[in-house]
Amino acid sequence: MRFRPWILLRTALLTLVLAFVAVPMAVVLWTSVQPDTYPAFPPSGLSLRWWESALTREWLLPMALSAEIALGSAACALVVGTAAAYALSRGPVRGRAALEGFLASPLLLPEIVISLSVVQLISMLSARGFIGPVLLVVTHALIGIPFVLRTVGVSLLGVNPLWERAARDLGASPWRTFTTVTLPLMRSGMFAGALFAFIVSFNNVELSLFLTSRDATTLPIQLLQYMEFQYSPTLACVAVTSVVGICVIAGVASRFVRLTEFIHGGTK
Image 1 (tube, rainbow, N blue to C red):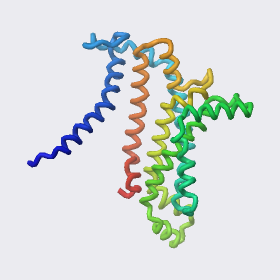
Image 2: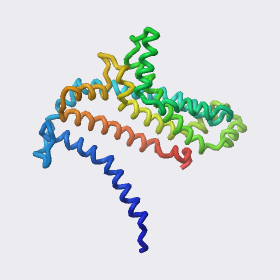
Image 3: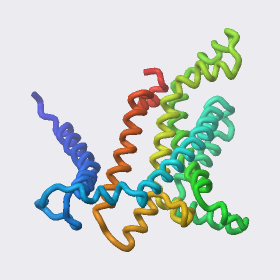
Image 4: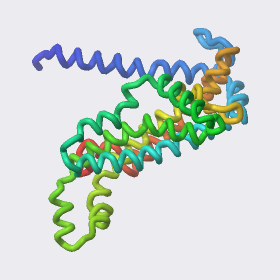
């Protein structure tokens, strides 16, 4: 067999990338099941003592609040992003690039700047009472819209407009054409965008930093505040719980929706 150096290089790079992703998670998992406050190598044994404090109201309530905010922001981003992607795909060409750039602009700005801007706006309107979960949902939806816009836009590239025209020629109304022809073909892109928006919202720190209230703290902010004053492997247990939850959601969605189909426009 002829030796190909580029194959060896590609394999080495892929291994390094996978190790870069997997090794930190392996360290976090190991930290959550060892008995010492400060992990040492070789490990002195296995223990679940830290999980007792992780699975308490102190952590479960912020985790539930983060999930609720992520679900709400993902739903808002899904509606706005899908409508925008469909309008841009089937609408006039003039101004399309400018509108796409405007909708994608939240990804270009530092999230801490967006958070400070929202706080300044709330202060100018004398509406500090709105700071809390509702405002977090709206703000997180801003950074979720670009993900939905991109994934749904890619799905619509694989939807031939002639299929929609054929349905209308056969007597289907515009709404029936959309729900029976277009929507099923871009469903995978919608779910992929919503999943990205959910993950970004659930793990967000910068936007939530100035928009959480004393009675409503998200999980990332709770972790940050805890780490400011002390360290405990309990943090590793909480991190493992949230990561496993997100992986389960992604796995179930991939099983029933086939998220990668949006790359092919839902045709494969």
